[in-house]
Image (cartoon, rainbow, N blue to C red; front, side, top):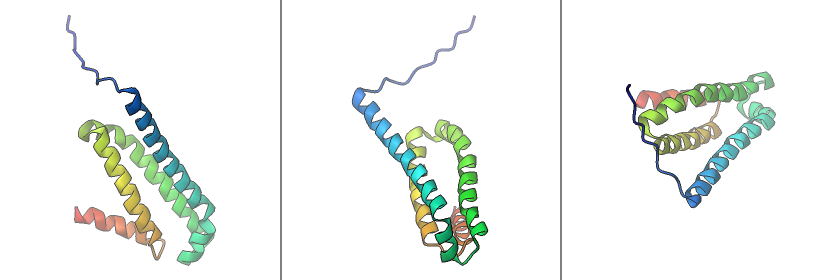
Length: 121
């Protein structure tokens, strides 16, 4: 009979668990807040970019699609590169692309910025 030995990660202390809980709660709040801001400001976004309100809803749709694509990938990425590294890079990417979206001059400029970043790699 074959037995596979699996090593479990070391137990976290109480302070580390509280810190991890606060960090995860804060980042989840940031994502929900970002989605709420985008939903509430569709009319303002549409006016600022010179597009119709129906085209402005693509902002929310593209955000939801990007999240739906990225969430399943995180399991594989964390196994491959480590949880902390993936979390840190994800938060940095979220901040950078949020800034680029805030500085956009047209509906399609955030996509152009993402293509430029991908092409630079």
